[in-house]
Image (cartoon, rainbow, N blue to C red; front, top):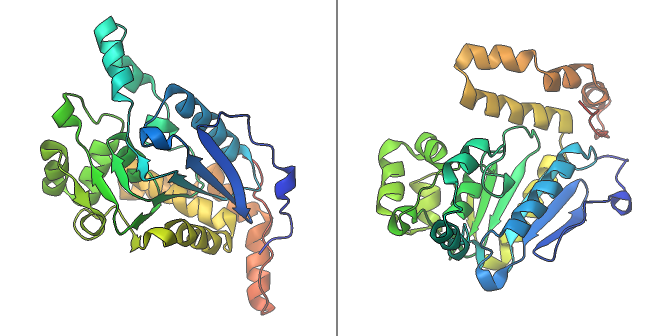
Length: 285
């Protein structure tokens, strides 16, 4: 795969106990939301920890894939509604400004579009509100058989405003997106896979994280330059019309890095020599 992996040299930013960070296999980072008593609802501290860790991950060239999961019986229950009530009651709430100024969205993931590195969601149990916002911006989603999903904001008088509305509309189509958003009801993992189309695989609960790590391993077995440029192409396709997306992708810095880097030569040479390629870390942009 590669010969330049040294997890002991990795120095992620300091973070609280609300987030666990580990490196379970080559080129892969595992992030675990660790507020199980609160169903991993997003606190300001956890959000801050995730932002710092993901920014570091984006800049760390030896890390190619991130897997996100939750400790306990929930993936993420979304926003901390009690804290939100306090802000509303005290007159300190400024939702419109927060949404408009949020670069990466809920938990620093729901609107994250600057990273070309794959994100995999490993969902055990429930995902509500902002938890679904996170999932809809991951590239691959693994869910347990008992996982449930809901966008219950309309039942609480609030709004799913951090990117899930356009994403769900694009993935599921207008009518099915309306069903989730306007009714606020819970759906099963199988429904999320077969009807709403934002889950890739449904597996036994004990197999969720191992399956996600196996998929991360398969991704990391490929050229990181090719993988990251492919993801960039998908992100650009969401922003532009067909030809503009193709042209923008062709002339991007990520594509330039691919065509002028070491891994394209290594991949072609390995094919010609009938051996496995030995990928190197992508150059920093």
